[in-house]
Image 1 (cartoon, rainbow, N blue to C red):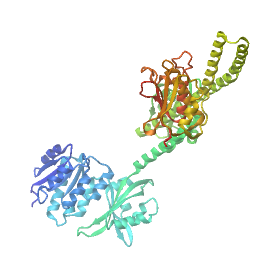
Image 2: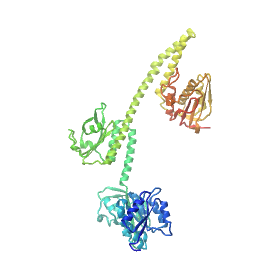
Image 3: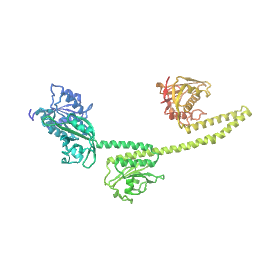
Image 4: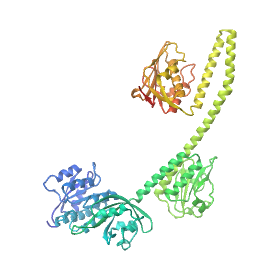
Length: 628
């Protein structure tokens, strides 16, 4: 066939195949394009004749059910000589590396357009038609160079010279990324560009690359400026014009940015954990300035927090580098100065050159500056001696650190407020337990003496009932106020615990049914308190004409247990409000019993709620249950 022979192309793309086909046919009138929307359609089209009915396969990388490399592998099994071009927007280095290793004939980014694709397509097809070794065309060296010309991958060719692995060739991507001129690296042992002496497996990887493709290995290269470039390395044979293996082709995928992001995420995770454990505002601030120094690479930073009066932002944590460069930093009034205005506006402010700000504050030794509000707590301040030092990534990460600090400080404030509330509750409990219960005990004794002296008396009986209710209320308030400091879990019989709690109740007209028995792990005292309150609630509120049946059993799947009665139940519009402190429908109720039930369940890590039933049904889930 001549170079003017028609070229039949099968283009595989599940989104834009028809558009690319039209443009490709316009770019070269020799080309006729058939399209396929999936891998299955493409393979079916290729299998439509004894030999491939097309001269070249062009495929997108991102396909609906697979990708272009998987399609390439499938095509190579039956049509090893068919030119395959990856024409894609997926410009990731790893994609290019995988495509090259899989034996793609060419790799063409879509950004170069259909004219460029037509040129590369002609080269691939004409080379196949005129050479006995069609996989790489009539000129392997030229084909390799075309292949890597557009691929976003660093590549080198290594030859063995006097027993040394010498760099014989490389592409512009390799030189540009490492910052070398070609005469600085060609002819040198490849190991001189490694950041550490080559490990045995690194040497073996290059050696084995001459024999066949070697899987990915992480390698660190040294750039011309001394910086480290972290890469993913893969080796394969380098084939000369006569088909003989003459060296090793090394592919290096740049992982530096990916590794930096990975380290950033790890550091963010570490900082988050340290913030969660922080016990004070200063500790939070110190964690943030250390992370900003490590991750963002700006050691000149500090955190200002709002003072107790809410009028000034004062420095509470500053790096050594910032203190050495800037000296003692001033306080900013809210709304004044750079930090004060950023805080008042609740927005990040970046100054490419803060020296242009004329507000009377001394900022010697600093040019670029960034101020990031930490919620309602303060401001994260970063400085650099370089004008315009901060980019969008710096701003984003600084805002992430500030948001984490905001969350940590808010949690600290809530924790401190809860501690103050607990202290007040503890003081209240002490007063109730001593100063109030003691005189009530005196009243109780006096009423008992009065009853003995005057016999049955309606007024005295009413006073005794009121006093009993007051003492019950005190006990339940103490239970709510103090909670359970520590729980001692042990294996307990549900039936035995229920029956023990039932005996002391006034249960005239009430019947207990324990439908199931099981062993549950719980704190005995706390479980007793929970069951007593549930059983008392059923007896008190579930009685109809003085009679009520209370049933205790296991939930389906042994995920917990229930306590239910056959009384009127709970109004649908009330729902879980029955567990609120103070809720009661009985004239003599304290409104604390079911609140104690919920508190006890929470302390165990259980969940308590209302179940569907004709009467009231309380379900406790998340219990560690062992059935016989």
